[in-house]
Length: 227
Image 1 (tube, one colour):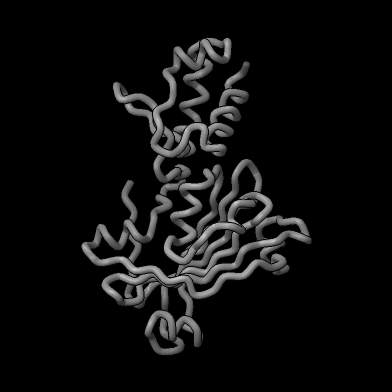
Image 2 (cartoon, one colour; image 1 turned 30 degrees about the vertical axis):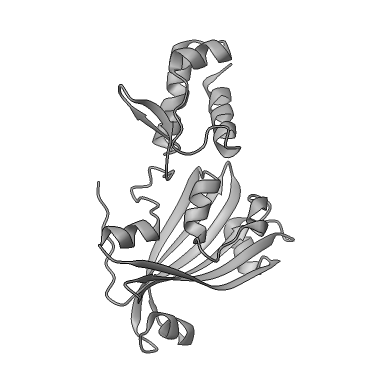
């Protein structure tokens, strides 16, 4: 068995939650015995998965499935609840809109979806100390994440749910400034036309489109990243 075969098997076990987030993987020696290969082959497979952010490898403490899988994209895929709580603020979440529909044409083009793709469209608000923090608009590809149709997003946001439900292997991130339209002005408590910071992110799992999200932040928001 080659290192790529081992990678696919590890990803399969993570995706199907045989190895849930935070769980400890068998040792390299144990995996080499199971797969009938050299330990060096296992090491290469796990090393590349760690570089993709799917697993965490630490000397002496072993290898674990990542709690919040991140691609080494120089920017962490964070959970907004955690970001707000780390600021020392009280977090509140509200689901504004939920609808299953055909993917709009612009999304089909952007994510290379089939023309008949179905998506779950969500609009959510995130608050810090009851002040508007982020307005989230998200489309989730049902074919890649079929369990999303039955998911309850009334108490847990889709970002947090997706990180716990399905890993991702690739992401594209874009940053832009937008002028608040009528909806954003209402949700984020600003005047129409006010400049706002927006982050757009597309993610895939093994070339399968997972989700596209627009996250628009409160006036004056600043993004920090550690290297």
